[in-house]
Length: 423
Image (cartoon, rainbow, N blue to C red; front, side):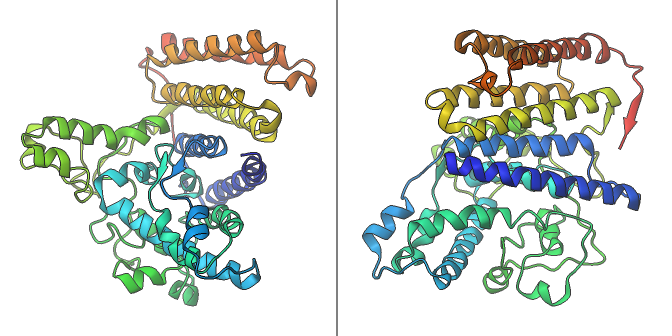
């Protein structure tokens, strides 16, 4: 956990810098593909995923270490060649896990968050799941285990492999010529994120595109078919925690309403989007029928709400950075108390971004929890040793945050004459 937290401390500023550069470039080009609220929601999703992973809140049914210890035919040293072999195996594992997440109803729940943005930008790359508590696909690393690739090699390469998928989530880079033949590029991944019928469930490769070409899931970006982004059952919320469980909740309701036991059981393993016969009439859900004619979610907000959402985002990033930098000293079980607070924080301010009046309840609960932490521990998990007046600063922030939520809910959300800013 400590090592992963330190990796994230290095990676987060780098990702944020690239997101800022992309937004600045779009500003000077006069084309904005990075609306503020969408970006805040995406980065918030990335934060919850990072906290979940740093706290180790997921398990593998079969661990790679177990496989290499019991199934390896040979044992090899961690040489440069070993890392190259392992990287190709990890990408093969990534392709099939990614493909199945698109093709099987139950697995789609953990991946829908990544596709939920109706934009396509670097920030949306950070839309990663918190609902994937169990890794079912470790067995796909079997080729590396049989070859005896050391577990430390896999542990090093997995985060690198993930981070290398960040750069191609952009609309500002066109086709890249020869590179398109073997690497996943922004053009390939725009196709993957599109909901156009021509593009659905294509280009599942993560680093190498030849997996798609070999296994029949490749689709080139067409000049006459501009990609439209999102999911066909739109999320209709900025709250990443809600999005993480929307599809699961739909499956639970459909299984409950199913009239025969076969449908109740098989719905989980059917192709993504499958519902029992006549369910669309009996239990209708909001679904995009024409990808070229639908309203994107929530692009009308007051400037004040957008600025406040950005402030909440960066304040939370600061608190998370402190957690990642001090996991060892904060220790168990306190890191889980901290993690709970982070999730509550993200839930609270993204509910406010959705202009839900009940968001003031979540902010009130967050205020009580934060004051309780300060009272019980005497400070913010040892922060006062580094920052003498941290207790007072945090108390002031939590108080202002509650006051701002009250203002938005009691004043601004009731004022239908708000001056709205459009992005």
